[in-house]
Amino acid sequence: MRRAAPSTVAMGFEQARLRIAIDQIVPLKIISSAIKKTPKYTQIAASIREVGLVELPVVARDRGEPGKYLLLDGHLRIDVLKDMGHSEVTCLISTDDEAYTYNKRVNRLAIVQEHRMILKAVERGVPEDRIAKALNVDVQNIVRKRRLLEGICPEVADILKDKHIAIHTFTELKKMLPLRQIEAAELMVAMNKFTTNYARSLVAATPQGQLVEQDKPKRVKGLSDEQIAMMERESVSLQREFRIAEKSYGTDHLDLVLTNGYIAKLLGNARVVRYLAQHHQDILAEFQRLAEMETVAA
Image (cartoon, rainbow, N blue to C red; front, side, top):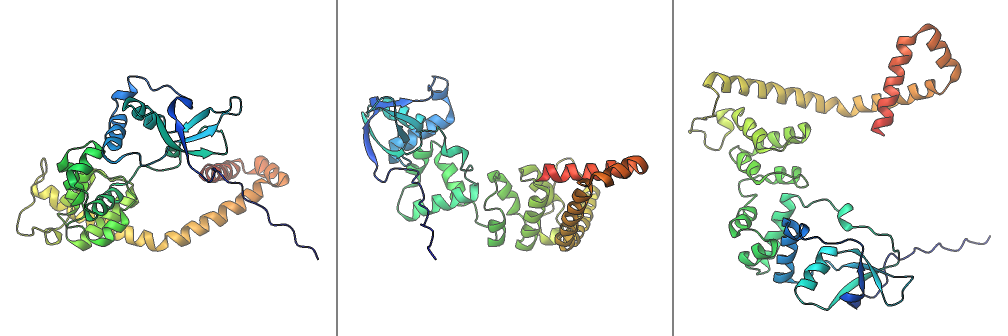
């Protein structure tokens, strides 16, 4: 019995990087003066000045004009290099001339990940003022991000590691003891709310014994002591209900998937649909609504 020949995987890029004259690269979009004034452009320019080109531009060979290259990714970087007087740049050569950008495939860096990158840079001996210049931010901003997880328990750091959260949200979490921090982080994820105001409300709803400064009375602007006490009771109740729901979520979700699958099969039978339309229009409407919800979710 003959074995089928193994299929080959097409390379997305040529194996060798190429040093190309910038005037041979044809941009696919124009960098206007307004774009040059944006924070993103300024940050890229500062980064290239301080640490050089980190991410290489991506080009494709121009099939209609040999010796020319289409710029697929890196328009801002190329423009900055031109303004700095560079005449050549090292590029990755794409085997596909479809214009795309890595930014469509990569999410914005979460603050915990940024904190860890800053720590690594500092451990390697990079001064904080140089990191600040590369990111075009104030040095104190780098110091705050370096100290981001001081007072935050490891479990919370893991829960929030890929979430986009304001730095002041962590300041509020640090006011709580580790177990309460974990509860607050889980609530934030469950509610999909990561704002500083929401974290502040969780602190307000935290019993005094679960705060770091247990001897310091809570003072919440616009709330009386009675209202704060009521928030604490409601927070305990909400946490208890959350735990109950968490235990049954997996089973409930499986039941829902199986039920919707069965309903979809019923609606795929013309005789069943016709019967329901004649005798049980309300049930048919509800079944169709469930099927539509499942389609949207998919």
